[in-house]
Figure 1 (cartoon, rainbow, N blue to C red):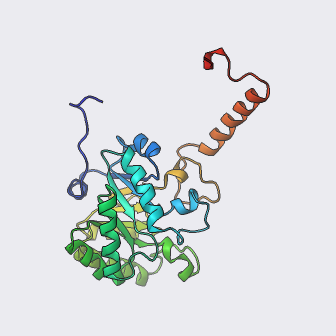
Figure 2 (cartoon, rainbow, N blue to C red):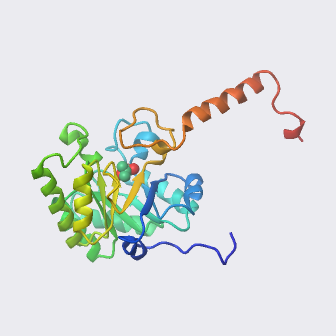
Figure 3 (cartoon, rainbow, N blue to C red):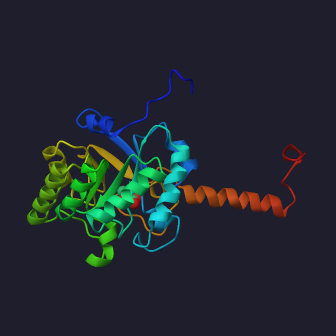
Length: 268
Ligand code: KIV
């Protein structure tokens, strides 16, 4: 890409301005290789703690650590130059506002992350406010919150009752007021997420929350068909990555076994 066509680095103000004007495209990435591929196509990259499941093979996200998330964020920073990069704060790293700030400062000092993401509604508003007051950009994650899966006894779509829909809207407004620059809405009934989107001034990014959000996020290993353990309803596979790898690997194996690789084209 020439210097004249190089895209400018996206910041939180560019993301805020996209609300109502242009849909926001976000994916997760865990390393430089994929971050480089996503670089020119997406507005935001989330270094999600979902990597604990797809990359580490754990049953949920709860055992992810600050060190692990920092390692992957630094790798993403080495590959992505344009998108806004978000660090997903792991379970247990933001239980108090002091602990949240200490860990968020570590993220800013040791990586190029532009913002952090924390799960939680009104109960986390004071933590969000404290972080923002101290110069940290925060995206709040409400609805289905994977870090709460053990505490709540499973993954549950939110907003099915009027009471829950009202609670989610209240959470969204309180988090906006506390200073979150955006909201991630996960596993929420579409109409409820659309109503939240209409009633806040900050952008909403949906995952399993319908088309009425200001943007969408998908986990890269889900959307490209590499993660096969399970497929939630909201995941659209844009390619069958695992099948492609298996086919290619079989071909390689066959050629090696039969002494057909490397040919002279691949030899010195
Ligand atoms: O960790 C993650 O990848 C996430 C997505 C579900 C948005 O939080």
